[in-house]
Length: 242
Image 1 (cartoon, one colour):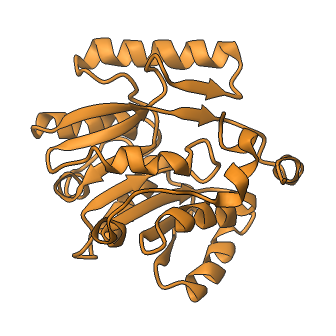
Image 2 (cartoon, rainbow, N blue to C red; image 1 turned 90 degrees about the vertical axis):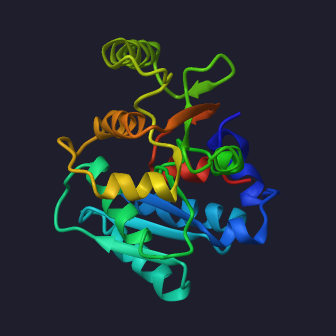
Image 3 (tube, rainbow, N blue to C red; image 1 turned 45 degrees about the vertical axis):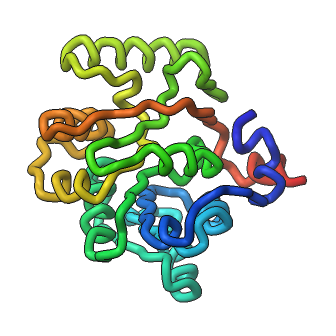
């Protein structure tokens, strides 16, 4: 069952197995645009799993004042960081900006990108982090046989699936899911990405990242995931409270 459908996973009570060293060397990048109703909850969920991990929120001047919500948390917790951009410039470029900021922390060794709307389940962090090494990056793949998608109509699933089939056919890189932004990378991978000049800035940059890393000698591991798309309204949030 997906994150929302399990009533916030008993209000974020998680049991994850991370060494203290791993916890302190993880950076999580969250691009946001109009995520005020979700951002506090997703940060709380991540902090319950990785209390010492560094969370970098890159906000594109959200009209709903998501940035101000994060700024409050930034004052309260030393491991929460806010990057405010002047305008909406694309998810891809937001993530790269977050990577560049997090890379300044010399202790950071594993870098995560994920969305704020709970389509990416924080409980899956351990399976992503556990498979990363210097030359391997990990993607939470929606198109493995054991993966599940909630909240998408059949037409959207078909469109997304065949878009990925087409991209794989064109690029000839053995990846099942080119367009899911729930991923884990090593520091070496991030160093390459932040120094690369990308030709895209939106969601398609997710595919461009795969090409860049593949050409740089990296391999990919796809991990199963439960991808959940739910209404972001306050009413929807209240409906899953226990």
